[in-house]
Image 1 (cartoon, one colour):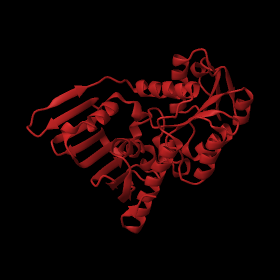
Image 2 (cartoon, helix red, strand yellow):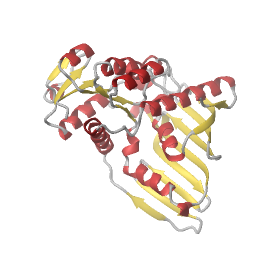
Image 3 (tube, rainbow, N blue to C red):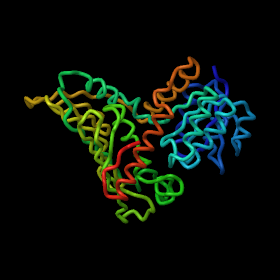
Length: 328
């Protein structure tokens, strides 16, 4: 059992984690690390507020949620794990693959739990979609199409989106890192990707210094292609994965909360599910606590997070040289 948990960073995602930790584990002492002033309603949920990792560690935290911008993730995780603190690291694992060997080395040496926050793996529809993929009735998978887009200015009401982490290259923003859930779940659903061809652009319509749109075609180890479109420009919010199979199409629509099977005879089986937005974060937290207390391996490891970063680096290289690039 753990008694003290740290929340590193109290931006929008850090505040969500704070609220849900308090709901799931009201007995825990919660220590927040933040750089500025917070709101009174947040402070009511906290046992202490500090301004450095060292101060949080001195409070005796046994676990921590790293919810800072991606550029800080790896060093913060290393500093915490070296003190024996288990970590849930918000996605993406980092803004680059630099220092990844040191992170993996420290994790192995300390035997700490390290979970990467690709929370769509706990979505009921995603789990159902993944289960159906293993059913032979769908037939051979022929092609996969992933489409995820929304309008960045609508993400965080009440603030200038151009000042958000998502819009700033120096903090690890951009559509590739911010929407990297899609890269994680195509590996989870369909296995490893061998290579990628990519086109990355900044349309200029959002006045940000990061890419706002990307199109990628991955070659899977199973022999079929997986096309992925990500963007910050769409006024119509979409998050959809379609597996085109020999016996029909299998569709996961995360926005509509549906898994749809469209068999070759034209009829439709519709499966719906209910998840509010907190649900997947709660399930992720439950998994994190369970891994710590029962010494289980996390469902999304540091290696998983590192592979996603390799996919991103390969896509950037492909765009730069104008050719297909093998994924290391």
